[in-house]
Image (cartoon, rainbow, N blue to C red; front, side):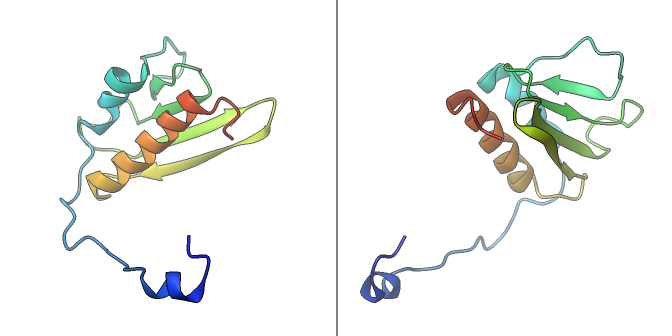
Length: 115
């Protein structure tokens, strides 16, 4: 974060030239390997994964073919108020879906008070 006008002048804004394109086929399943998310025996067939701390769920319509259907990440904790959520469909670039899912998963592991 710049602290003086001179610092701000040295900043360079960089954006990706190309995103890999649509799809989220394998992205959610890496959450289990990297962050301890697991399949939950839920009465709701749309619940795909639950975070290790059980404060976040990743849902996808159970009837949707593999790699299709809206992924919805919901984060909440009764101690801190209302949950929030974000959704991605199969047209969302994989890098964006992965970045959000990994940032939340990492945050939940490293900062237990994350809301």
